[in-house]
Image: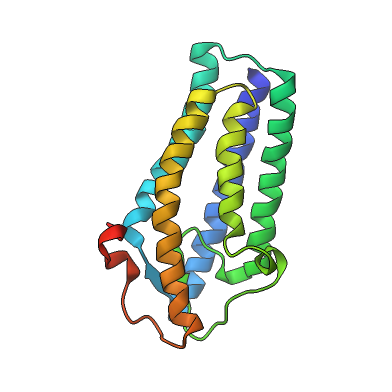
Length: 185
């Protein structure tokens, strides 16, 4: 259980690094005329991801969830691969990467790195990590609850992001905030 708690601690440190990069990129994007879309759903994403990082070790410690090697080792590998994919996305997007949906006018869509094959590869990493991180130590309740909440949040997020990016790909610069649509509330 201590090793699992240390793993969660490492993921927390990774998330803090992500937020530092996102904050820096947000400042750059705003200075370049970037427009944020769907800001109202962002706090819910923060709450869900924070809850994941609290609930997983709490479930392990409070409910005595065991480490089952046949499950735990493959899930640990999935967590490591998810982190690799996440940082590949960060590196590929460079200053355009953010934890928020921000579009800088005039910049083309990125179509290299993992974006050659997937429209939203970072969300593949989020889904994989949300399932695998709790299951490293059999925290199946957390894995189930986060996966359900994350499915709803990602449906909203991807819709907002696709609408925001559609304005760029069709030459329309930010006609309206897709977060103002009824599904973005």
